[in-house]
Length: 179
Image 1 (tube, rainbow, N blue to C red):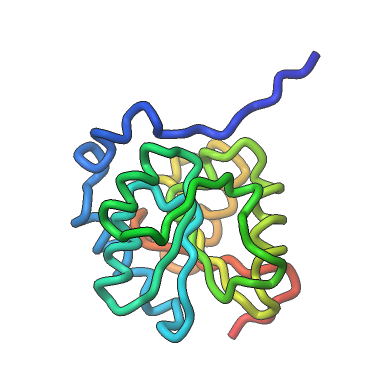
Image 2 (cartoon, rainbow, N blue to C red; image 1 turned 90 degrees about the horizontal axis):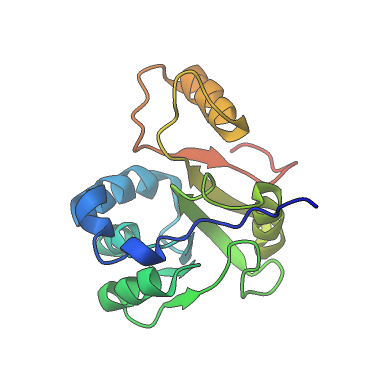
């Protein structure tokens, strides 16, 4: 019998998550690195919004942001920051119609999900043709320890060997031309 891995949730540490992860200051720094890659005309969907610190930073920069997170406790904290634009949902089962999203971000999320391929397929389903999906992984170990770390490590080093772990990488649906 094979054991099915489940996605990790920060439900149990939601009350201290921000204090241990850099809080709003780190969220603002991350938002500032994302902003040049996003179009302020379109809403941003943050998949894995957590406590909403990045979404708050994006909002302060003029972006409309909505988001989802697996953890009800994290989502509750995000709602306190952002209002009723946050929902509890699994990244592998987004509560949106096909091709409904222009742009989405996932920051420090993919290393936590049980089935990365399912999440990527779900995001591809939800993105409109030509939409964009910005992804930033957690700190990549050296040497890389899994497939995502290897991919991000190689991409990051090709772009800039001095890469900052809090910056983001741009991922696009398969077949989408680079601008």
